[in-house]
Length: 345
Image (tube, rainbow, N blue to C red; front, side, top):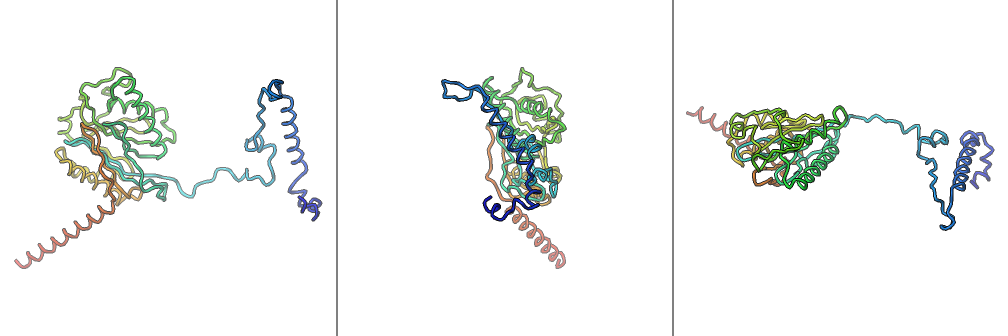
């Protein structure tokens, strides 16, 4: 300000245009009103004149202050909604299926935001309790929030009733909680992969299992071994953010699910061994990540049985890619040898 006085900047037309007198008069009036109202508050004599009431002035960041005391240099008009350069679409690859040895849940670990890789090592399979894991697909923040809410409600149910809520009851509870958000921007698609330990574990409350859930059976042998009326054994239920609830023997969710379904539909059988099931799930995720740009990096695998869930060590998909290239090279070499032997013979 001293430099402005020396240079005579206050007398120039630029200063009067940039800093009108009315603006500073309004600001001074605002603070005078504030001081007057503060002095008019009731005070206590015992507490050395400390006010017994609190006056909340209009904050500089509030809309009322911005409308009345807006500076000519205020960036308020530039803080309007700005369009993103590209839509923040997201994708993933998660899958789960039932076989004779239990339930397999697998997923990749890439979190994407449009054309960006937000994080290459995300946990898309979350354990809820000892016999239930959840695969998540959709918005990362929404999925994490609802997984925490679901885990909290399951724990509260267990503390109140001294037993764990069944998988179907858990899916129904989650569906009821998500249904009010139908039509909003909430994007959640969860697949519940678990094992009900006790037979006849029905619920007497509003969360009780019923036959209203749509059953999608892709294997007749599986349906014979574990009929839909049984309350024990492996369970695989899909719940999405509009409240839909589907039960089946195989699910794949995410942008890479069409490629994963192509592998699972061709090789999935009820009598798979544990090693074969793990290899099938790993290859399904690998094929999906090879074709889908929103999936990739690593693969997480969970195996759920009557004894609980167990997690396999995280594997990098590039190792599976090298193994696949080696298998293809061996197949091509074997075909060349057979062709040469046929020509000589």
